[in-house]
Length: 317
Image (cartoon, rainbow, N blue to C red; front, top):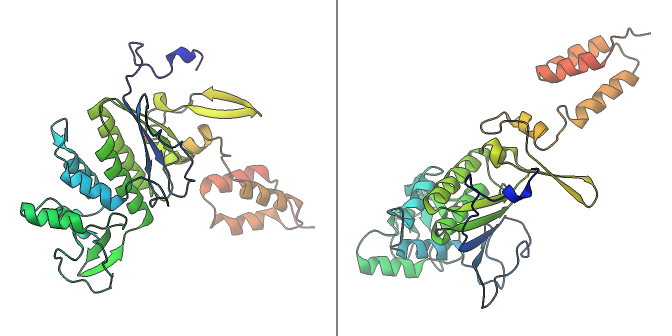
């Protein structure tokens, strides 16, 4: 971008009004990816959100605690309750009735008995039944344990990607406010491409509903595929210590993953292993035509044609 004064401005040239900052750390990242929130006197409401398990000694809420806070909340965003926004997002990933919330001191077994106040219960029932039953249910929730999936009366752990998505959906639906800036550091960890689609779908919906914005650092072509070209900024280091800012030549929204890898991330169109194979074939004494015939059944057409162009046909001596 030639004129850095246009950065973070809308079409009218106005800067966004930010009242809250949410910094989202990816699973497996160090605890210090983002700085700790100040104890007092902060000029802006700042919170860290972890998509991994609660860090030892931190004051951040676990997933169970976030679910209880969401279920208790009567706040709305554009006339939609925060809890309902969360449930809508989860239901796109996994049937809501299959997700069960663990309770304190619960020992998990393969055989699963119908839920009561002292056993895991369906996520969909967090706000159901009478007031007294709700209070007992919320009080019983294990604040740190992850939900499980129950199918045919048997419990199974959710995948790491599903847990990551649930943490993101719960924490973001709980804490986002009007005029929030969200910072993401490589959130693609553990996420299947389909989960990335739903991740961006929920994020886009919440940003629009609250007039917020997000900055996402990623190495995932699947994330880039979910946003238009105008929202993608490429950072390169052509010379050590110098950062170059560019926009992709490719229209990214819905683009081919291979094209995004090449035009945005600078990946080689044909991998290093394929090029090494070509070099070995050039150096060998065998008839390359026979070798190519053997490789044809294992290589995609583009890779096979690449080798054919690179290798002159050579008769065995």
